Image (cartoon, rainbow, N blue to C red; front, top):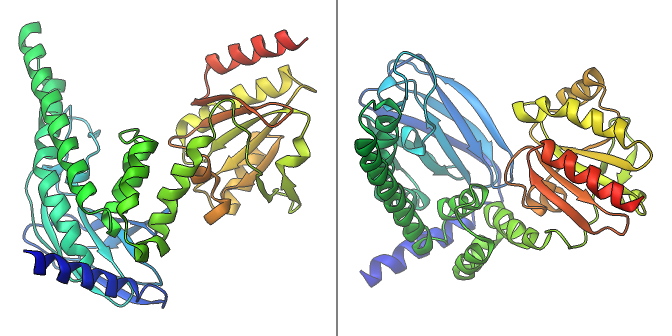
Length: 384
């Protein structure tokens, strides 16, 4: 057993050394019952952005190739109806679940094949590369438990039984949810020195299932070689961002405005300003824009607004600003130290942060609501 652990770690460390050179990888499938004409591929490179691709299915399988200089986490979602967790079988909506998709890790130059079958969840493995040995181990432990949890959630939504039966079903669901989460946390803690382990630590933090102290404790065990990856850097950024709470000083934020001019929030020193994290893809963000326009008008001369976009192309970003008349400061979140989504541990969109004249964070909230309006109204009234 000890020799197997040493061999696996050695293979993983050796594979890390290949990250720097950009070469093509190939991802293919050997799925017994792949249905539909396409699969949907989502790719993470360790930053807080992701890419989405639609890949054709030919003769019951798919092939995908791209160049990369770093490891990638890839999720492949098929159109098989059996994996969907639909609360209403007659409607299109379904509960999202990782267990409905096929997962793998690819590195430059690797050939990876997804094999297995799709039942009421993705019973698949990724063949090729030492990273996938860890990925498979984590997901094979987690997915059956997650699938049980999701099936109970569907059962709860469809149930028309007595209150007592519903309560019993809810108790069973809660127990299954906790068992799935505990199993995943255990596997991640044992495999934090892996690409999938680091990806899941970040995902835990985004979903509020892992506190910053817990995440900080987990990455203490990460091998130094993995600290060079973007997956580790993103987790480290989110942990560092834990200090940006109410009462702390805001970090320096720089970027380029839509007109091409440079921007820094240091230009807002001495003023109150509201940071709004948004994207055109985010329905609640766009629904909240009239509210921000009202705030801008109501507190004219008292409050500035800084919009930070994530996930859009520059063209979509500029078009939305112009068409919606969003006449305040705007920049796009970048990567590394300019990834302000990670730097400020933004876990959902929209997120709003109120900063005072001395740079102190006065208020922070997920979402834009009347609660923000009330707090601003009381706050500015107190300052008059």
